[in-house]
Image (cartoon, rainbow, N blue to C red; front, side, top):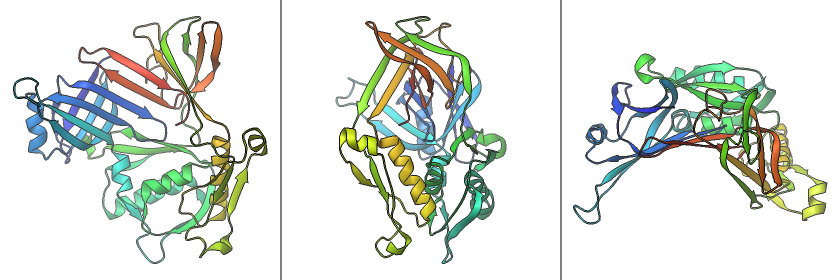
Length: 360
């Protein structure tokens, strides 16, 4: 696969393709911000163009001509040489998928009445607020994309609530939704992305199989990590402004089997919700995820035709098959979901993909 990077001004105008970028890394995640980062030799002509535009703009990442990411530059850092003539200074560029900084910087409920929703689909409520709330006031560059109903909800009022913060709260429950951005070229219609939501993103891909130590042997290595840091088997969700709103009740959930096995681990979930149903769903979701230590599996495909190709043969949210057998020990043999794809490209253009197979 060949990846190309392009730089656009904030008004959408194309400045040009970025050549000779070093340490390129693209990270694609489920329900989290996708990112791009790279370095440029200070002698690269694109460095002066970046600084002429105040270091601002958009980075577009293409895979074999297909747009995969539109990201807003969030930080530029020029590292000077410690000793003149010994090392060439380089510019580090970090960019984040546009809907995250843009929609986190837009507020709902900027009035005494606040923003409320009543018996409406969770994802649909956010699509409606985006189009008829945020964009009606001032265009965000993010438009409504695909939508599929997940579950209905009532809630609010929220006052001066960041849009993306509410998206994350409404999507995080067991009956919530997945959401993602379809990247757009800002020079075409002034848009940088489309906001999509569905109960579950992705499909089961029967032909995407990764195997280490067995079968196709198309995984060069793997990672397995167990983390007990966020273990919790009894979770509380207090109403906003507790104890002033103590009459609204405290939402609580627990897992008795985990308590018996590991002892009681309690936590109060940080959130800003008044609605009892939302808080109860949030408590149940936290217990479901945190009642056992978090296990993280990662599989790193080999380069070449033996391994399925990211974004063509499988994508974020898809269900694939993974088998890890090392020294006769079966670590993994299951259908797993792709929660993340990291693409690293070295200075010689060699691509290395890493798959995250557990939610982070």
